[in-house]
Image (cartoon, rainbow, N blue to C red):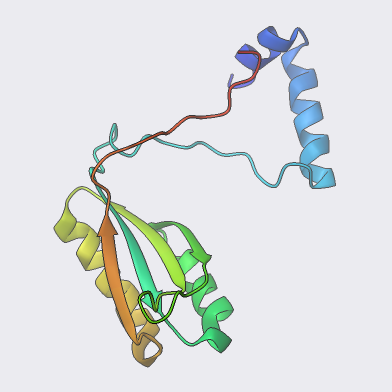
Length: 137
């Protein structure tokens, strides 16, 4: 019954909420609907943004392969800032410990093989702001 509260807040039946969301999905206004867990609350207290220096001409292919891994929550391309920052591919990995995150990052490095010229992991030290969509608030 995930749409009942929203239906109550906007004053329409839940079936109408679902129908409108379906139309927005079909038209491309909304790309996807999904749950966003609080990783800390479910025991994933180590959060590492892995950063990768890979060849620019392969970034789309490699990013798609990394993004398909079940332990990568998001993966994206960002511009390099040479010479200080050679990394252009970013992939967020969550784990119960730093060791678990590092093991998963090792799996990504294996997948990339020789295309991985360098990488690092930036661990979260805290949540500065994390808010979800608020409707009618």
